[in-house]
Amino acid sequence: MKKLIEKFGDVLPYLFFGVLTTVVNYLVYLPCLYWFCLDAWLSNVLAWIAAVAFAYLTNKPFVFKSHDWSWTVVWPELVKFVSCRVGSGVLETGIIWLCVDMLGWNGVVMKLITAVLVIVLNYVGSKLLVFKKK
Image 1 (tube, rainbow, N blue to C red):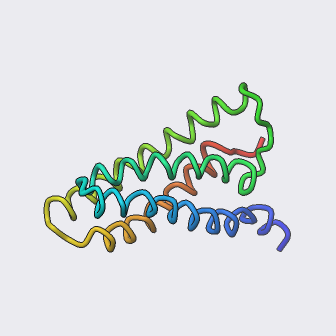
Image 2 (image 1 turned 90 degrees about the horizontal axis):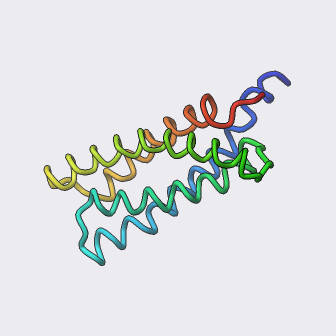
């Protein structure tokens, strides 16, 4: 049991901060889409930027227990973190563009569906590539 907790003990905090990151994402996406009448893909890109910044600032200390904020640690972590997020962000934006901008499907529903996929992909990327245990 202890080995399972050591191996997957960051899943619950990741889910908690993943939900908060999704809230940040929606707090930018929805006003851009409905108040400022931006295309869904552009609204998604702006929301992605805000969400990635929030996710890094919360995932680093609270999920993956990386507490060294020196530039020599932060810079490589941040580059890897953003690089991983770019992949899932491009996938999400492509799905949003196709389903909402091109096919006219509901932007809120599609954003929610893609959020589940993105949370899983981002966890795997962060766990395996960014905040690896030494």
